[in-house]
Length: 310
Length: 250
Image (cartoon, rainbow over all chains, first blue to last red; front, side, top):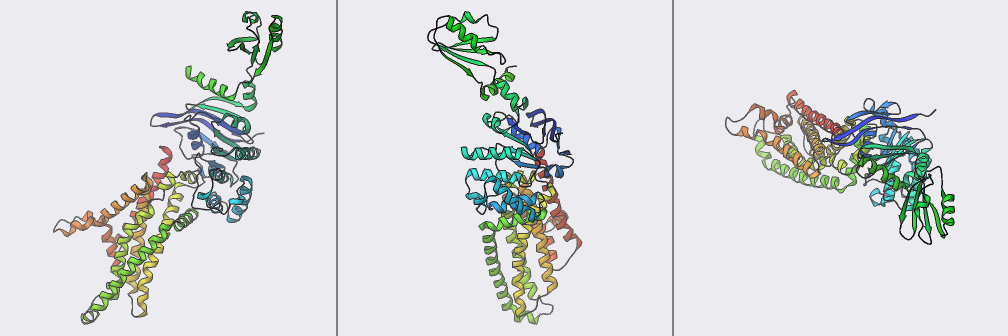
């Protein structure tokens, strides 16, 4: 049986009448990595701040590990590790001093803190900079210190707001691996506006647009959805498109430049064979027949703009 | 938890040159003032010996020293308190405290005691100077301790007001300016009493200076002590409320 770590019901948040988050409900179970996806200003950060108790929701309630965030904030926050969009670093301290402080703030004893620091620094690759001042570290290292801060007290839930911003590709890969590793026995929420990131590290995805939750799926479901089939066909000379009207698998045909056509079809029925046959039968040379995978960007754009036009 | 926050606050203060330079400059100025008071005392020593019930060494040296220290602290404490909450909010480090399992009360008290600990260091340094007089004379220890006590009450009032200003201001300089202005106003509030018949009891009661001077003379009264305790706790409670309301609206 899966344990529900976060349960958020009908969360809304208004700033001076402006609605930043509009009636969002979701839950997070142990072992899930939930990706929050949305354009800038969609309400990702506001939602995360509410989950972490930095911001009180205008309406709705949040249960963290069974504790109500408003009624039992201490117990609830004990299960939380939070990395805000700007890592909360005291730059005049060294990495060790800072992490010691963070550990103690979460009620670890000095001995527990020492062990936790050692483990966390190993995990985040901070061992070689442990005694350096945070202000002298590069942005990538500062980001890692921020992540270390969020996981030092071994919380059940880790909330990361854009954890890979400002990192180089190798560091991004390391952080993703770390997130995957942590995801096995924690619940993780991370926000990002990079779609491939969700695909790489998350098990579930939620898309937020203008404060509303418009899409909620597992990654498998998302990948399935991404295969709304398109075939790109290129021929030597122009073909008569009327030849294809009888095939009911084909939804639309778009004519692109240079005798290139885009066939959209149902996901489950790939008409590639019939198309090839017809083209060959019409005495035209077939140069290219490529299945086109719809990118996350397209899904994202279609989802977000659909809502808008409705 | 309060202790953890207070320790970090104190540590961060001493990691910056600000704390050290404040301590050094304060000590230099006060030592100079201390020496001039000794000079005054030695000049009038002979005449004083002739007067009955003349003010003693403690009255002539210790009282002015602590009075001067109080005024210098009035100038300095806003500089120390201005960054407490304000800078954390600006640097976005406040969310570390807000998402940790600690209450707003603990955060505010931690910061208060952190800054208080630093100001106590100042008080200790000030108090050591009169003790050196024991080499060649005698001190009225009752009055001496009353002065230390008065200064302690005073710094807790300064710290709490500065902390509150730091909670509401958006920029440290504004916090410093506001707390300095308010403290100075409360300090000079009873100067109207000097004009004949103009003194108001209310202004008299509100003035920090009057209460401070009362305790300084060795007169411990509940009115003065409770004034300072009420003053500090009012601004601490206001700070806590202000911090909590941060979550409600931004």
